[in-house]
Image 1 (cartoon, rainbow over the protein chains, first blue to last red):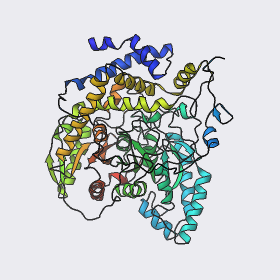
Image 2: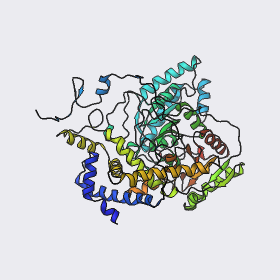
Image 3: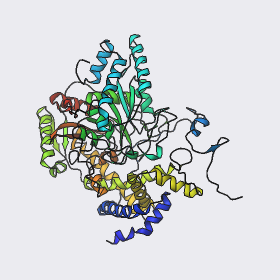
Image 4: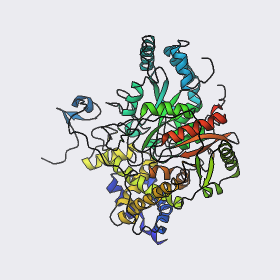
Length: 100
Length: 482
């Protein structure tokens, strides 16, 4: 119960800021309820004794091989920029960040 | 064609003997797709012009004796793999108009092997789901019962293969997304070892768990697909350099690990076909060895912590600037990011991004994310220990058969539990496959087989042996006439 109280509306607002998401009013209640349910569901990991266990971030014990730092395939800028909504003079355009 | 739905090998024989041309074969598959796929909603796009052009080239290659392992074989790609010049949407509004500027390595490998891509298949949005109901293109229906889901996230691929609308499909498996739909649709679903297939050009969900693989009508077909797909790729730093995948036709007895407790709580309707499969394998000379997987019960929880954490990081790239959906409501740059992402992502994707952000945030990183990574090691070590005394581990693929559409709407964790038998395998990076082993109330049941890292040949050989003794993989759904 105490753990649920930690995931409240205030935390949800903060998570949305961190995630760059803006929820509709109709989504907020549902998502908060779902996140609390998911949190309760994953909380059983706290019952596992992991003292002296190293975290595993990659399933295989292998060295990461680095390739030579050289261009393999080149795709021209125009091809990529066709995927953007706003471009100009070869740049990606975003809303003004610094007011003149 | 000689038989209604021949294997890849049979199709290859027909093509090389000029009994049928690649163009005729491709047209035949498009005819099937047009007459059937609307009932299933399994395709997102069809590439008829480029497929027929490739078929003409295949015929020319065959005529000149320039034959390759999959020349003329019609396949489809899950909508998660980039295909140069074609839309790759991941069934998300976010990528609705994304046209890939390059091809995924496995797409190129299959093309170089001569396969013909007829189109792309429906899936859960960004591969997040186990029912194909989160797709922005609407749900796929199970060809064995249209009121039921096909599983997910590779639900479109599984349904298309089950309905024999293509000879084979690619899929991706982050927590069971190949094996679970394969089980629900009665086809073979193969997820090789992590690193065996390149992830380059596959839209990322959870990078340490994402495995490209395939869905086919038989284990032997899966072997042919994997042989063409696999290989070291310098464009994927986690790609492994290993001997090519091979298999032999000689039968040899194997030690089969049997985690009794995993089978204990299954409904009788699922337990019975799985028990029969075990007896079939035992009668064929294999030995059953009881094993334990002590950390199985916490695998789904630990998986969802890790998968959501990686998803929240990977999906941070969708900012509406360089590609992907950009909101018409611009405001300032922060508003533009948030509005574009909120309009572009569906609810399940938002749920996972927020969950991932939570477990990675200050105060929770150690207690959730690092804790889950430690449990990941315990889970992987359970398997490695079991492989000291076994060659292959048997397991159910799913806890139920395909459920009805909308049956899991109320609690997201009900859906997550669907993957309880498959997620520990992704966390361990092991090769595994689901093969059909019977039916319950007219819906297929799948048996999962798991092998040590890079021992795909064990699975292929055992699976081929099993399918030589049974005919579950040859059963075909009858779709209603429309």
